[in-house]
Image (cartoon, rainbow, N blue to C red; front, top):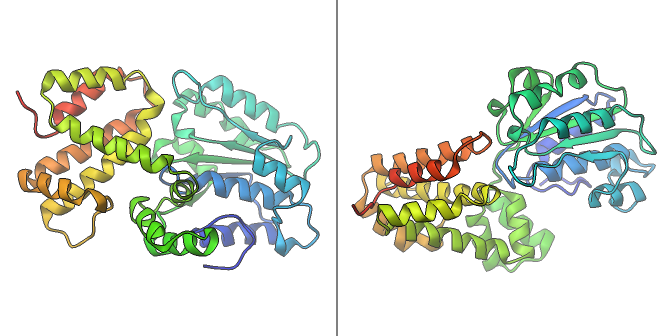
Length: 333
């Protein structure tokens, strides 16, 4: 791992790219950071905002993490840091919110060198809402930096992508996650090894799981729920679909975990030598793999991925979940 002062782990190439842009005075007005949930997109965006506005005289040592600007940006309370919010009811990034942030980013900085706007989950903005940002991207204010976060570039309008510099954060190798947890966070090696296998390369998830056992408990509950679904008949699955449809925001992490389970099942069905991400579920996975064809495991994986990608749409969630559960194997008629 490269030595740099940014509070970002596992994405050294992205940090060096942005550091060079600052050092050479070639900071772009718009960046699109893409990658899986909890891979570190928001952490990188905030660290970039800190580096742009750090008060330390030594530019190579920015961000220092200790000056007033760095601390306020880290806490999200800096007047020149703007972050969009999702609608609490629908989970969408509404056009009114996009327009509000775009309007505020046009103002001159209150006290920093740059005003930075971070649009989290920009894939949850419908085309009309994304389009509302185009004028700002085409005619950006001189001291403004816009950072869009999304799981993939293909979830956005081509006109948005073409006006942004894309930074693709890939999953971090398990060995790097393990080393980071031990060296930077003082984790017990056995605990670090477990988290590194489970996180799927998502450094943000790994750091959160180390600091708070809740993600590991939530993961266990989510996988228990999936195993429960596979043992239910049609009526039981539909009843569960109705319950899950009441909390749209909770579906994204749930489906992402289920996706890793079905990937493991498919690898076992195919006899692939890769170790499963959910190694602690190996007995259940091996039992399932003995009962499934590779085609059935692939169908379940693809159905899960499709619903996950479509959550930003105006879906009837209950019907979408019912369809998903009909695609899952083991249905007792």
